[in-house]
Image (cartoon, helix red, strand yellow):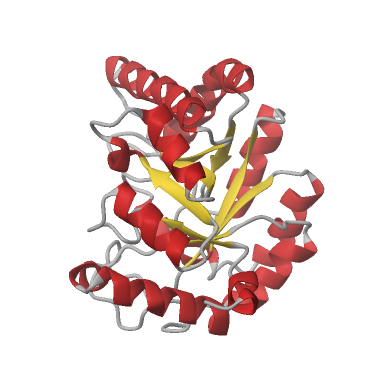
Length: 277
C-alpha cells in the first residue's frame, strides 16, 4: 500500500464488531496490514484474554485504541438489577484502563416496564455514580443516543439533544457524547445539536455506516458507507465544524457482511471510507 493511501486512512478506525468473525488478534493484524490506524474494541472480543497484554498487542501493531464498547444498560425497575448493571460498568472502566483506552461508549439502556422518564433518571443517576471512578482511571464516558426504534429496551436516550441535556446536567469533563450517523441522521436539529456539544467540548466520538432501504433487520442490516440514504459527508462536515478531529469509526452490524470473506469485506470498508466519508 502506498504512502498516499496510508495517509488517506490516518483517521480510519474499525470496530471489532464490524469484522465479527475475526478474533481480536486477526483483526489487529489485518487492520494494521491494510494501513488502518484505529481500533475500537468490543468487550466480547476480550473474553478469556489478559486485557493488558491484549492492549499491548494492539499497540505493537501501531493501532490506536480509540474506545471500549460498551458500558451502559443502567435502567431497570428492579433495584438489584440496577446494581448489577452498575457493577458491570465499574468492570468496564477497569477493562478500559487495563486495555489502555481513554473512552467508553455507553449504550444507555431502557426498561419497557417503566416510563421513559424513569429510565432516563436512572441513566443519569448511573452515570453520575461512575464519574469518580472514571475520573480516577482517566476514562471518559460517551453517551450514545440511539434511534427511537430502540427506545423500548436498548436506550431511552434517542436524540442528540437529550444526550446534550444529560451531559450538561452531569457537568463533568469526564462525560460527553458519541455521534452515530445510523441513529441520528434523521434528526432535523442534528446540525444545531452537534454544534452545541462542540461548544461544550463534549463531542467524543463519531461513528459511520449507512441506512439501507429497504432494510431486512433494524439491528443487523447496516450498510457500508454509500449504500444507503445517510448524508455522511454533510454530517462529517458538521462534526468537524464543531471542532472534532478524532478518528472516524466504522461500526457495521450486518448478518450478510459477517458471512463474507472478512479480508474482502475490509477492502470494501476501505474503499467506501475513501469514496463516501
